[in-house]
Image (cartoon, rainbow, N blue to C red; front, side, top):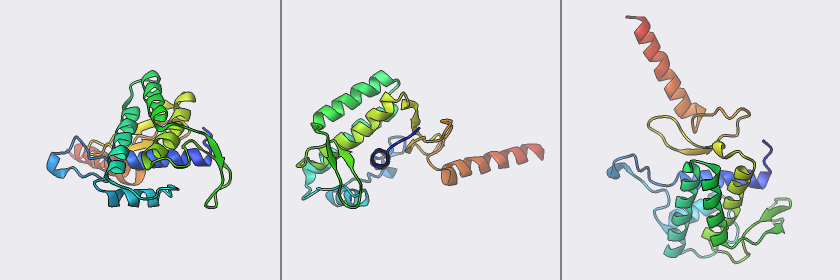
Amino acid sequence: MLIPHDTRIALDTVVDLVNTAPESELPESEQTDGLADVGALYDFAERHRISGVGELAEKDLRAVQDVRGLFAEIFAAPDSGTAAGLVNRLVAAAGTTPQLSNHDGYDWHVHYFAPDASIADHLGADCGMALAFIVVAGEQERLRRCEAPDCRRAFVDLSRNRSRRYCSSRTCGNRLHVAAYRARRKEASR
């Protein structure tokens, strides 16, 4: 699947944003929100080089947390029709206004948000359109959650044959393969 550079960056941003949410499967005392305050939102914006952020406030934090919730719903959507409806709702609320841009050392690419958009609208428009391209391409099944029992991190499976099962083969995948190997060895030694 050929994905343009700016769409790939937007997909990475969506995944990172979704993965800041507290894990509902964990006990409440162990849940942490990666976007718990405005400082964390500034850090997120800087890490993802989100342009034109300006001054952020609590209302921006709440709006981004709401967008994050919609992104999580898109990852959990049972079919493309549901995903499409959620994406449509997201990009309509963001007021998409496509325009070509070349800034910060990037060649020409499309921004889908208005120049004075809030950070939530910026994320909703650009990242929502990246998800729209995935749905349009019939590739919604690439939007996944890690299959490790103790991890539910989001990821986009960009493997050629859509076979990726874990958010990271180095951590979750390796840990489960080692556990399975040890279980087989233990069973064989009986």
